[in-house]
Image 1 (cartoon, rainbow, N blue to C red):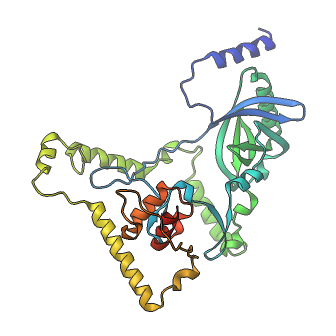
Image 2: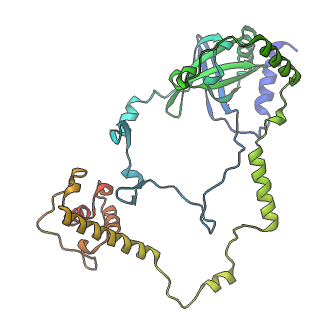
Length: 356
């Protein structure tokens, strides 16, 4: 069969075959000079380590929230901004629109700029590996590029924009397959001098000869893949299997009988109400302490908003803001969409609600 027809057949067979593997992470085009090669990126690694989730004693998965320790409240996403720390506890706020303005231009190209000897790239620069697979109609140029790079022992250096970030890539060829390695930037690598390693000196010849003999005695022709085993994960899985079999520390869903037994004539404790009363008492005690010590010493951290002399009348059925706890005031401020509420004290929240 002529080579052109064979290439066309290989391309058709490759793309018509049923693939049940992973889906491509990204698709685009390798460009250099007048050559364009459509490809897809597939993640070359996968994590098989055991992941342990945080749950409560009833087996309910826990969620992470951003918490303000100064105000002792959880924040909503619209109350969070990004900040660059220039000094200890001193930040410069960077808004989303500013980040958008400096973001790289969207592109579906892997801009292959130069080729360098493979041995010039320190493996310490490699951050994450991806397989490059040819898209429809690209088998022939893919093979040509892979073979040429492998024969010349060269790696391609390219840039690529993925999900709004620009990355530096090294494209390598091995056994006819192209692989892309995301590279760390130069300033991310430490040098031996950074950690205080001494400069190298000539070792004792006699000791060196003994060490070489020991290395040869323990040498192997090939790397045993079975030696690259995550022992810790295997032990955790074995322990979990043993516990499942023994029904030990296994959290089950509550059965009907358990639910009925849990019911009683006792009045259920409203934990949220208890917490709110505790916080209210804490805020009241804090306010009294401030009054005794001079009142407004904390205003240096946060400028209090001026309170209007006349307060708006509450709607029928609503409690006066002065009678509400800070959490209740915060919930009310959230309903009224009062900006900056996460940074307000109880008194500021009350004033803002009355003024709304």
